[in-house]
Length: 485
Image (cartoon, rainbow, N blue to C red; front, side, top):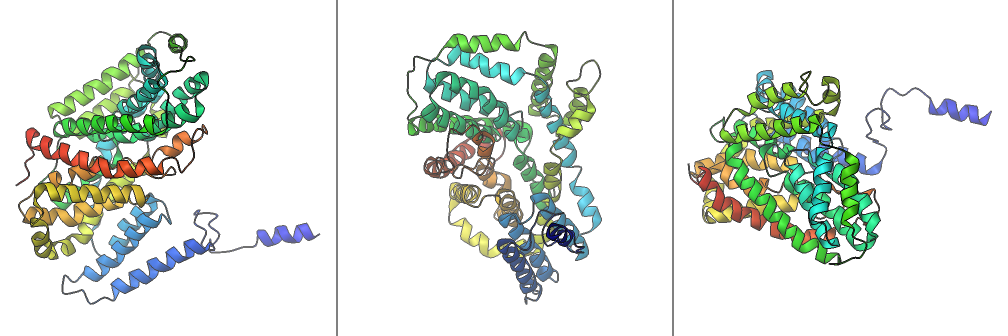
């Protein structure tokens, strides 16, 4: 009888969802309740603030912006839901029109959807697995070389395939390799961490490498009204150079940090060769996908329109007779939540436009004393700190940087794309905490603990923004992007 009463109490009707059964946000949890209260208090504080001298909509705009930014940082709700609050809240408060939301989608949603469609085609072939075992067979003569190969295979694949998919795939390839050698404590730890790092670092290679890149371009288009952007061909030399230089730095640091031995008698090249044989001969699907991804990147580098090429190539990927996968499988594989985040987040540029314009003059005077290289370095270091320390705030910080400072840079006569490119070059990588970035994708193998990434990650957090700043400072003018407008 007691059990029946308890069951009836659990199923008691409740109109509101305080337990988070439907929304996964338990408002009875103290931390979540505090976050909600901060959002409400902050919203009201800005709403009733005497800031109408900036513009009539400033109090409302800052109230909504505070809520969205706080939700980005606190992760009380997921990023997609936060972007919907930005879009829906802006409409309710009259801060932008429906046409502003419609205008945001064609420039980002469709091109990135096409790129993702071509990229997920790799998951329907064994080409990437074949590539990894071939590299091991040819070059994996020692534990340290195996660790190097893991990082660079992960880095190379992630320039064309999503970071998360790359980390999962490469991790599954190298797990039996590590088990066969038996170097779990040193090789296992370093290799899995390097796989996660490589997947994040490789994302900066091309515009299509990670969602942050597309998000940045869409936000620049919104903040500068299409005046300043960067092409696929301009991005590629700078992005690839940053990716592989940072990859080399990681190779020099992590295997030594985790004491990966230079020699081990259990390393057997025949093991790798046999694995390669088990995969079987090269299939037509592998060749077709390689032709598709290589030709798409080549055409984009040559200057063909991103949206046109990506959508046509996505169509070819599902075409009977020549395609890589079915349309239904492609739809299930696409990261739809990322597509909507990329399309909705730039609305922050419309929201905070008047506020940013008000601070153009004082901020221009402050930044002008730092010089071009100093400005690029400061924003790169700041973005690295945010990505590594404030987990989950990376996309929001990127949108805010571009939104707020693009008008300031233009007023100073500086190209906003060039000033912020170093900060964007490491947006896909979180070096410090093992629970962030791509690290959870390789944690399942049990070779390392969440604290193993902290000390070397802190060093990378300082070194990488300096590297990306130097590379961007030297490379961007060579591809037609000058410091000044």
